Length: 553
View (cartoon, rainbow, N blue to C red):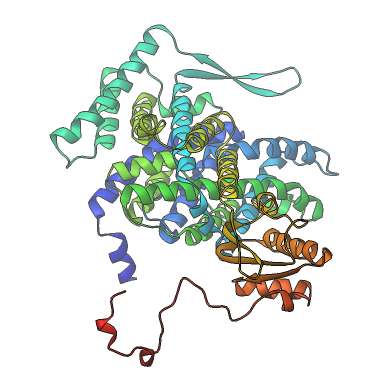
């Protein structure tokens, strides 16, 4: 326990202040998460506390902030709505059945994430190219910016004749809009100027406190956290300490129908959550020049979601906006995430009236500054300097992140990058041809042989006009997949069908084994014990007539 405390408190002051700052910035996004998913804000806040605390203690990336995030919320909307409908069709109809399906889905989502960590799937995040990473950062910065722009509006609840609830937004106008813009500008100015004067005070937290005091003492009518929650249909921040939700097991039918209903949503939410968390972890790695543990983060995220579902909270993942705020505020250790979670819970339990007075403008200002810090402005400068394919991927990933979703954007970016890589390597296959004194035609193959280069590989050979003896030397080639082995096998069969003798040299051990399994005839085709011509140094000192040190290589 002592060692654990030492590990989480090397940067205690900065971590504590950063955690408090992040908890303030967490509330509006978590509440927005609840609006998107059409659930009680307290459900989302409870989930943010549980997931944030578990990942801060056990996660693989100190400094990474997790909570109830909007990227996951979008996935749950359709499931909750359909769940309500299914609940009304039961023999004994259940109100708010979509909520219980949500909790079960969050638990299953967590189980999938834990399994991903156990089977070490987290390491595959290393396969994400840098152009995809930059596109992801830029797209997410735009999404966060646009989300803040939407905060310049009032929400009102309308109920149709059929009883369908719908939130209608009305953009601010006149004096109210100008006051809002003024406080946003004041917050941003404090965050920008304060570090130039002193680094002893956390800029973001100071800006929030100054703006809040001005609003309270001036008596100006502005949108606050409290009014924002009430506009969304909530009753305020007052809540209770999360406890196991026993109603879940009383109302949820445990059967195959429930499992098949929630499984697709759970799998998609788990995938989106892991991608966003691991991408955020990569970003923190770059900002702090340290390295996190992706598999450990997967397990912690999953455990957090399982507990959140059991305690009546919703699902979540790593949150890039709050993570960047944490890093910029000096949060580097696990303590910052722990303080964030504990402070968030304290706000809910004890200081609800105080936190409800924080103006939304202050939080918007903090997020705007975070957007400026997050956006990779250097991408504009390097677009003409990097390969066109990388520039295309960067732009596409940014656009897809904004239009659709982070997970889709990453998948699209990786797929495009992989196809470009395969295409470029497919063009690198080469064959140098020469004849020996005995008339044997030798093909020396250069480059990777895989599914993308098979067509070009086959074009190098002319079975009909080649002499009776042909030798293919793979000394500078690498057979990368099963398609390459099949191509070699098919080529040998063509030469043998033409009654021509063919031999293969310098194949890898794995390739030899697979070819000989395919056909015993390859034992006569493959030349064994062939020295690699690139290496001629003798390992035995007795082969040298004089000391090795006197030779010049």
